[in-house]
Image 1 (cartoon, one colour):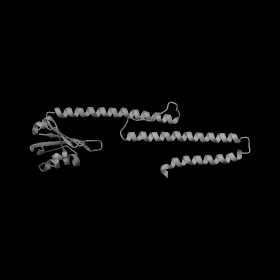
Image 2 (cartoon, rainbow, N blue to C red; image 1 turned 180 degrees about the vertical axis):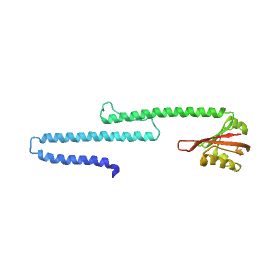
Image 3 (cartoon, rainbow, N blue to C red; image 1 turned 135 degrees about the vertical axis):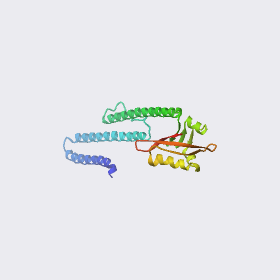
Image 4 (cartoon, helix red, strand yellow; image 1 turned 180 degrees about the horizontal axis):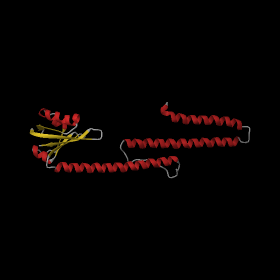
Length: 226
């Protein structure tokens, strides 16, 4: 009931208006103001209908607008008519300005992410140190050129699963998961790492540096190899 409280109150206002108008009309029936009373009642009902329709249309358009935003579609807005200049038009214009700001913000964010990703890839690939980049969003390990030379491979990326499922990598898996999921701090140890490519294995010193987001979750990790 509370979910539809505004609708109930709005309909209640109409009922109250009709009751008061009928009582007023009875009193005015035997007077010369009866015709005027009819016109006033019709005008009041027209006002009520206008506000109702305008509010309902805006509510419908705003709900559609909000759904598009929640779906990540910022190329949206509320269509307005050039002849409407009331308060609902003002709200629609403000809503469209919000959408414009969100589009600008999303464009800047996408550009910054692209630049950051590109810079990270350049640094990662051109580093003289052997580095494995652990991407938790894609669940893959990415080997830079020095790391590929260390293992003698050409393949740039391998999935977490393909490496962690190898029995000989149990020590690496425990060390990796402890560093990125439990302790979430830089850790270093010496261990054996085997790749699912021609049974290649190397005895290495691995230093894992987790990178956390604002909620203290590790999204990426750098594994420096020696």
